[in-house]
Image 1 (spheres, rainbow, N blue to C red):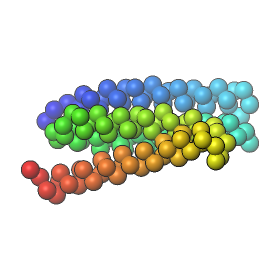
Image 2 (image 1 turned 90 degrees about the vertical axis):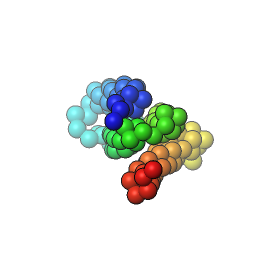
Image 3 (image 1 turned 60 degrees about the vertical axis):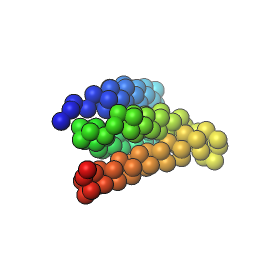
Length: 135
């Protein structure tokens, strides 16, 4: 079994994005004096959800891809999966701040979530295929 070094490298980049999203929440909480929740502020609500969506999806997907990498999935496939995840998690926050229906909203929020769902399903199905039909 090999160390999932490709996945780990992407995870390090994703961790930095996660910190940036968290710092944005802190910055907006301080600016709007909202110690808990969103204080009724739309920008803070968007920042909280961008941070939350990241925390909800990235660990599960990264774990699945790490298992695939350790099981011998070719490096190009690991890069494609983690690249999709990285792109989706960069796009999504930009869409969270956009007006619903705008191009930025569609590309960012909707595009980011569609990519996230796609990489989740592809990773899960690949794991199942490799487990059920080895070789």
